[in-house]
Image 1 (cartoon, helix red, strand yellow):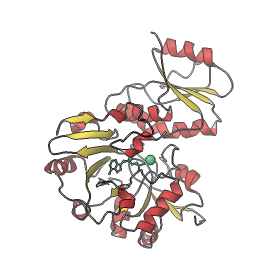
Image 2 (spheres, protein in one colour):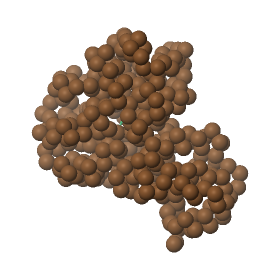
Image 3 (tube, rainbow, N blue to C red):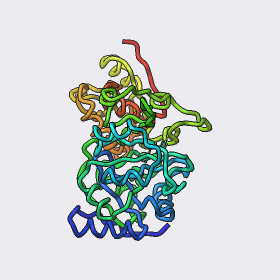
Image 4 (tube, helix red, strand yellow):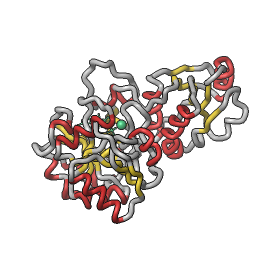
Length: 342
Ligand code: AMP
Ligand code: MG
């Protein structure tokens, strides 16, 4: 892999032009979006796409999402798009929703990991939009972290993982959503949720029925065939062992007390930190899942900076974007849950 002096640059016209030129030349660029930072390359260029997999250390069987900046860019990438997809696009694009659709021949197998479908998203972040327009290309981009690490929600996070691996990161500020996009398989009359995100089940149910794939809340065996290959990997994980703890605040406090020791941390809701028996990090208000989504990956990275060995996390509510928060925590915890009485 080539060694770069990775530059983090503000999103002015000149830098957008430089980034667009790099994309046109087959290089990989760090791109801010409203979900997380992405590692973008020309989706039509197999050599450029190979650089994404190399920079991340991503397994080749995990497909990439292709990013567009107008509805006109959709047709050449797909075939037989169900009418429902247009209705969903009208409601939720630009925004944090990825639709899995039958792919056209123009999408290389390297992007779709050999599948006959491709994930397409139209991001709402103005810098992502300007960059895709300036490059004049659909941009394949996974999250800009090393494979397995928490996704980057700031340019600093991305530099931490990608320093020397890519030439440039455009700094568009902290990501507003803070979790990766909602991924749905679009059928004729319904959708199947493969990964929860900022466009919630409740929001989509206003348009059509939503089936929740088993992989959203359950672990998938290494050799099992899954609808969304990304769901089978341990993910979003700090070095520390993460455990989700279900139960009341007093039960949580007593449990953590029984576990205390060097490197043991608690992740709790705002206002609960002060009387914890171990150092505690706050996770946002209990009834504000948007704030939890925004904070989660930064918090998981902080655990590493603190040298945490074990992290016990209060179990979040699963409504709205809370389902996405819980889904990411489940993977960070490798599905390790403790259920307390009371
Ligand atoms: P990331 O690139 O890190 O945001 O992850 C992309 C997610 O979308 C992974 O979980 C992939 O498995 C999923 N994905 C992308 N393309 C497809 C596809 N064609 N079919 C099913 N899942 C997909
Ligand atoms: Mg990812």
